[in-house]
Length: 251
Length: 324
Image (cartoon, rainbow over the protein chains, first blue to last red):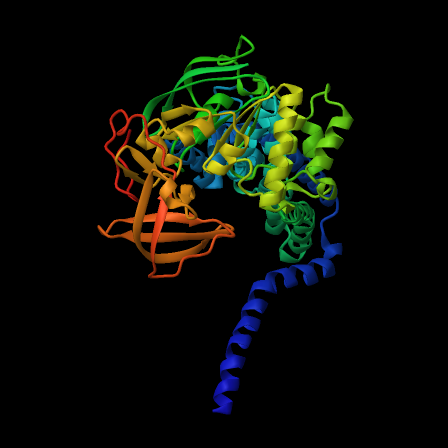
């Protein structure tokens, strides 16, 4: 009886420990071998990769926010029957495989394309590819944020004599900001980790994910692991900060 | 003066007409049961619900103006302080440049908000929110206050204090007020005129005291709490007379079948000899009758002018009449 009870307590605990180790194993490997093999990073790759990645992702995030905020706000004001249609349309870029997005972008942005932009294999090509991977996530989360601001607050603000922009900036934006922060965090993670679309659109200049893959192909795993650690170090602080802030702000 | 002559489409009830003139310093009440259309009418005045007709303040047409340009402050029934701002910021942001600091200070002091000024809207209780919202509405310096159940979350002493103060303030500053309420005591206490609403329709309109002492029709009487009609007379539990029943126009004899606390006194259900029941209030200080005892109760029962109302048959006590 006694042994049965202790077994029923030990078994779940053991399961949790095993699962925990399995889940955390990649992070541990990355941390240990990444630091250990830091000196193996091929010379001359670290700075350009890091700068390109951070620059392109920051721009992608800015562009996403600049276009995504008004779009999300507009979507939140749509009547119910149109909302379903808008959700479907927005899901298309979200659900398309990144490689497919890259192919279509290469087709649209190439020198021989209708647009004649010749953005393939340029910094702006990389930014565009990252925007396409990040924007749908931001818009969906921001849309939910705006939709979650009760109409009552907007009405009261208007009855206080406030013009629409003041209602938006003083009431809607602050109340939606926890969601906007989460949306920005997701968009940043998607942008800086974007691989499929940039691989096709912008093999050069390379961001960290594509550079990582090239190093893996040309040099091998020990040289690639420290770069993977770098990608994680660059990618994580903003989302973690945004999530912590949004939890605090929502309280 | 606020002049209202509007046709307003009320969901499920169709178009309804609202006509009223509210001079400066006066209070118009919209009274009726929940779902009676009070909130919709108030929202239509504020500009949140479509309406056709005339709406003007001192001769200036406001119906064509957007919500933010109307000289109104609207206070909805649900708590509406912005959750992310302190009460102080809500008052300061609501205040137009012409409102002096002294006026804000006076509002805060009178409504007992000093201790709450640095608390965010989301941290305030229902009653605190309601006082804060009232202060914010007045800080906006409106010509007309549109208040939806403004006293519903206040305790009785605060309600009396705030109501009296607000009435005086409106008179001294020449503002008007339209308030929605489902509590007849609020209407009697504060309103100069009342519109009795049932399913969005105006059943009666006039001075609350006059309407209560002489209900124009049965639907209006029913809304004001009259529960039973006998001949042309209608009975209200609060108009029961225990000390000298025979001086009243209606005297009922029966057996006390229920006694329950009600307000400061009690409420008795009397089963008459013909099997019908009637309720009567026993004020504090009057001896409470015993259960199953046989008693006589007089009623100061007014006569209704139009027995059945325009299209409405008299309703049995406790039942809801058909639409009017």
